[in-house]
Amino acid sequence: MADEVGALKDRKILVAVDESEESMHALSWCLDNVLFCSNSKDTLILLYAIPPKAVFPTFDNTGYVFSSDFLAMMLKYNNDVAGFVTEKAKRMCKEQVQDVKVETRIEHGDPRDVICEVAEKLRVDVVVMGSHGHGLIKRAFLGSVSNHCVHNVKCPVLIVKKPKPDCRSK
Image 1 (cartoon, rainbow, N blue to C red):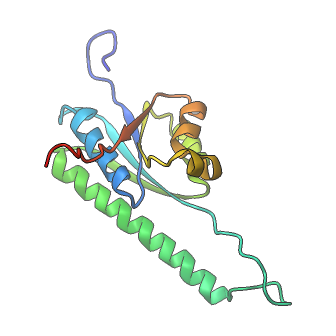
Image 2 (cartoon, rainbow, N blue to C red; image 1 turned 180 degrees about the vertical axis):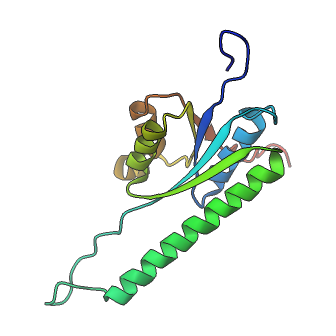
């Protein structure tokens, strides 16, 4: 990514992270293959999207299934998980690449929309994300975050698949 003069361009690279192995594999792959020179001026932005609260059916006449204390506890748990995942990802970055600029963002909302919105808002150069490899049925019901981002983000989207273990190499 050099400009007309040949100098390295400062790039913003958004990596979507979550608690999955696929996400951490994508980050590791990005560090090895996208951030190939440690003296670059690239900024790595680690994004964790906390999904919206699930809608629970009501079972009692008050209209509430869970107390506000329980919902607050769930929100704290989600924030703790997000903090843990982003710190783990940040450590991985510092261990694999020297002198990399790392920023973290934790946002609330549907991961598909959050990734697209943050990518546009920050004007990133590329989005890197893992693929969970859901089958056709799950993808039809759950939707594919990566597929949504490929079709809605205005910059390139790099989807990194975690290799399946080779059954032949025993």
